[in-house]
Structures are given as structure tokens and as C-alpha cells.
Image 1 (cartoon, rainbow, N blue to C red):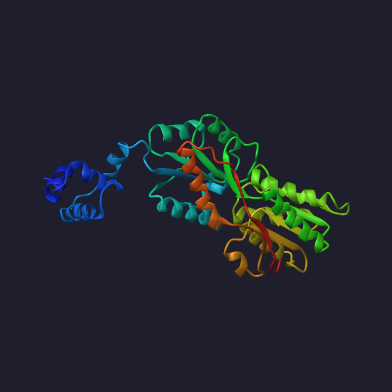
Image 2 (image 1 turned 135 degrees about the vertical axis):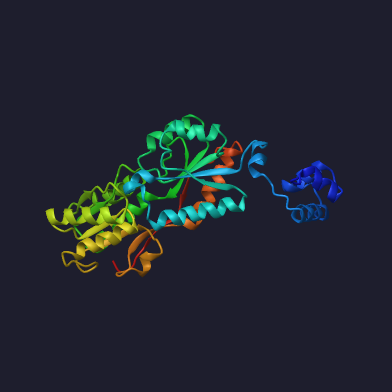
Length: 330
């Protein structure tokens, strides 16, 4: 017969509630008793049924992480930046003994998210990227769903978000282009994403102060290397090459370098280039990418902390992380 909690209590010479407290990491049990109970449990092959344990709790200690699958071609996400964020969130959740549930791409509307909460599959959500889900996120907030978002920080948004100062990032790129004497700027990115739109707005704000500067926009629907490379190549065949390019990500910036090389153009001699995120390959790429740094090593811990505050009944404010320009070869 499988050993149960009552058997553990008898063998360890303690009460059944004491065994329960030990298995739930209660601080009410002294260390000697805890070690004895755990030793007996291990020796007799007792395994905790964590699913049954969660059903007895008010919360099930599981957080669903939702990626922006819709912004990537065929739902394939390959940008290292997303996985850096995911790693930070995963580490912070593990420190708090929280399980991570990676939500499926089919989780796209308000009701599907509410169903996940009501069925007690997850306690709350961490969205890594707003993408084009802004209306859905607002509806989810109005429904009282516990969640936090990595993305553009908007003081008017009805939910808590964490992100870099995207508008400042655009301004820093613009000021760099002014210093380098560039006149024909190109912004590459999908401005239906709020954080990318903020970067575009910051770039245009700098350009507006210089009458001889023009800003074009190349809308890239899918946030991946291949579609960016293809659309940049098409744009260059139909338009005069710009002398400065601000890309929505470092991955996009690497694709842009490849597209320019098809025409025999190299940064920084023929054009200036600035990416975004400062992913690890940015410094080792040839030429090394100038970029806007987001402190992703802080982001995971902050996102998890704010979600825990919400689950405990708090109302945390949105946070803006430090944002700085990293000047390299491009």
C-alpha cells in the first residue's frame, strides 16, 4: 500500500498536522522535527501530490507568462531579448517558490485569460510585450485580472507596466544622428506597438528641432530577422538610402546591416545605425552595434515583485527602468 501522511506521522512520532506543516514549509515547526519528518518521508518513498496541495490553497503558486506570439511570423519567437526577459522572470519566480506556466499562443482574448484564472490554473499573468494587444489588456484590467506587463510605460494605462523610457531611447538615437551630421533618417519598426511608437515619437521630437532633417518610416509587421531583412532590401531598392537608421531591436539592426551590404554600403562610413535592447551579440557583431540599453537583469525581479503585490491586494505603480545609449562602431 502507498504510504500516506498518517503513516509518516506514526513513524516520525508526531501528529498528522505537524507532518502537514513540515510538508508546507511552515515556520511553526522546529528544525529537529522538520528534519526527522523529512527523513522518514524520504526513506519511505513519500511523494507530495502538489496538484492536490494547490487545490487546498487560496492560491496555487503558478504564474502564467504570456509571450507576444502574434508579432512573430508563424508564432516563432527567436529574438534573444525575449529569452533574456523570460530567464529573469523564471529565476525570480523560482526564488519565491512559484511555478511558471508558459501560456499557449491560443490565449488571445479576455475570456481565455479569465478562464485560466477561474479554473485555478494560474494566479495571474506576466505579459512580455504589449504588441498589438493594448485594447485586450485594458479590458483585462477592467475585469480585475491580476497581471503586469513588460512594455511601454503609459501613466494613463489602467494596468501596471515595467519598461525602459522608450521615448528617451528615441531621443538619444536622434541626438546621436544630429551629432554625426545625418539628415535623412529612417525609423524601422511597427508603431502599432506602444513601446515602439514611443521610440518613434522620441526620434521625431529631435528631428522636429532641425529643419534640414527628414524622417521616413518602414513598417515591419513581423519582429524577426528574415522579414526585416526582406522588407529593408525592398525599401532600399525603391528609395534613396538614408544616412541614419534607428531599428526597433538589435536583431532588426543586424538584419539591416545585411540588407545595406547587398548595396555595398557599410556602417558607419555610409550611414549611422542604432539598435535597441543591447542583447549580448550586439557587442560582438561586426561592426559592433550602437544601441539603446534596457536593463533586463532588473526587469524579471521587478515584474514578479509587482505581480505579487497585486495578488496580495496592493496597487503597485508602473516603473521606468534606466535607459542609456551604448555607442559602438555603427
